[in-house]
Amino acid sequence: ASALVIVAACSSGGDGSDAASERRPPRTTTSSSSTSTSTTRPADLAAARVTLTPIAPTDAATAIATRDGDPTLYVAEQAGRVLAVTGGGAPQIVLDIQPQVTAGGERGLLGLEFSPAGDRMYVHYSGTRGETVVDEYAFTPAPGSGGTVDTATRRTLLTLDQPQSNHNGGQLAFGPDGALYLGLGDGGGANDEGPGHAPEGNGQSPNTLLGKIVRIDTETGAAEIFVSGLRNPWRFSFDRANDDLWIGDVGQNAWEEITRLPFAEARGANLGWPLLEGSHAFRAQEAPGTVLPTFEVSQDTGACAIIGGYVYRGTRIPDLVGSYLFTDNCDGRIRALRIDDTGTVTLERDLGVSLEGPTTFGEDADGELYVASGTDGVFRIDPA
Image (cartoon, rainbow, N blue to C red):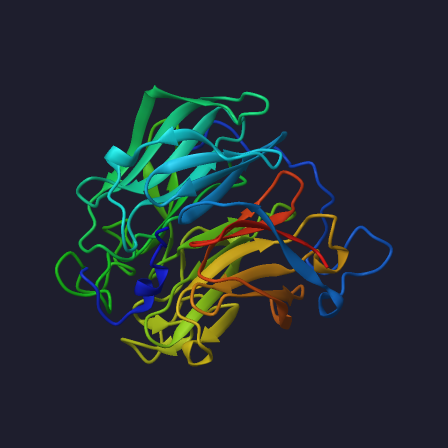
């Protein structure tokens, strides 16, 4: 089995476009604020105990998506397949676009999402020239098999040339405003410089979507910069309880970063790259007006490529409610942090479970979380 090489995203080298028509309805789950749960006592992250339950084998899983009211997990594989995982049975192929996909290294089928109504599937992949492509397909659910994708309905929403083969970003996610959001890296190579990079770095340039969280109107295909100053935002998510945007941005040679942005304050936010790496000087000693990370991980700890996750809003692990889960492609440990009302981290801890080469998290309709390995398939995060 092949494995997505996210680790290359942090190497010092590498070869390396208004209003949305629909809003995502609230998911059916027991939600809470970031500091309390709907149970009789506050959540206690220090007391949380979890285990990883194998769900399905996959080949280089890159993304997990679900539909409201559908227990099926939909899993993207790097080579270009989307699998439906239902009820413990063998995964079923619901989409195979391998002839359209350049896969290998950091390229491939990188993102997967469904429309709020669940009748359209969106995929983000590296095209035959290595370019970024976001496509939409009509989707018809089918009980027990996941559903059917009508490939004749394929509609391309976005294409974007990539200067190098790395730092492609990956995440697709519908936001609380009903728009589709896409994470794009800075164009690859190293230091956000060289051919295909703006003098100030693509992360800082207002003239490119590279190095940004991009907002896409799925009706018109119009794309706009939403958050800038990013190096490789492989995974980001919206907190279903309060709409906060959590971004995991892969670092260069020193720092991995997690940034939480209240949704009302996210548009126009600049996270600093390549002026800063995390909160630390890179091209500049300081960068006024930029948003500093909520949490950083030093690569001296063995980290190399942060895998952003979700704020847990399920019911099966009460002490985890309100905590943000994340991991790292090299380190492999599943970790969690909590913030207070000011956005300050009050506790961060290793949850005591790990897996080899984690690539992505997923969240189901009930707020329960999953994590995938590039080599070992998909796991559910369960109470221990």
